[in-house]
Figure 1: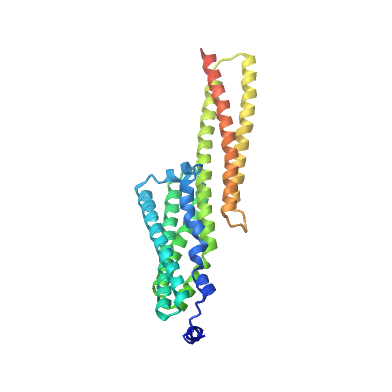
Figure 2: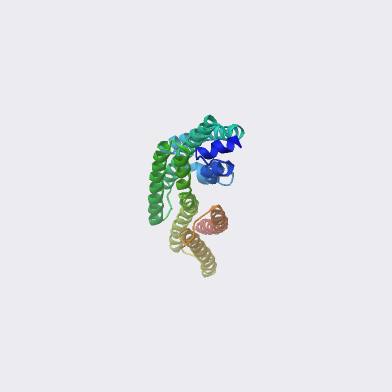
Length: 296
């Protein structure tokens, strides 16, 4: 009872649930923060995401991200220790330690997310094949959110008591939905651009092949066979183009925020387009080989 009286007297309502809520943001975006690592480590995705780290700026950012993430994990452990100590002792000293460690882990989390979003922006800038207006819109969102995270850091730095730290945590929780949605929006554009780039090159190669073969003399029978092959290839290429347009439009669907589930669905849909592209390339290889044989 004595501890409870002291707790109420100083009006510091940090019981277990309040303390957890005051730093809920530490955990609410763990999936997003770790997402950068998950995408990097996932075998199926490493050619999509890690290959973006080619420029010096990207390399600098990934190294800074990894360093900041390690620092965040350390401050998170310190926070849990301070939290456990406060729950055991209920002293002003342990309360102060809990407030300090909470502020530190929030600051370190903000640093991780700032660099993560800078890395996403750098990756998107380096991506060819992305639809330009979508790319510019997403980059604007990322820059806006980076500014909001930096402003949040200033709020954290000025928070010197429990109430101020708690308010900073609540304010940050309002940013979480947009931070998560924009991250998945960026990653979606990057993976779509990879397939779009291959598709565009295939379209160009196919047009050149048709032009070259149109200038070759051939028998009526061979011309009819080639016409059927062109028809099949045309239909396949049109289907791939339509699918890519549909997948891309899913990013900008009204009243929809992208999340891990929708991102996974986009990747799954792209795998189908990738398979169709492989089939189209097989068709083109056959046409090209057939043309070489005929030329001989």
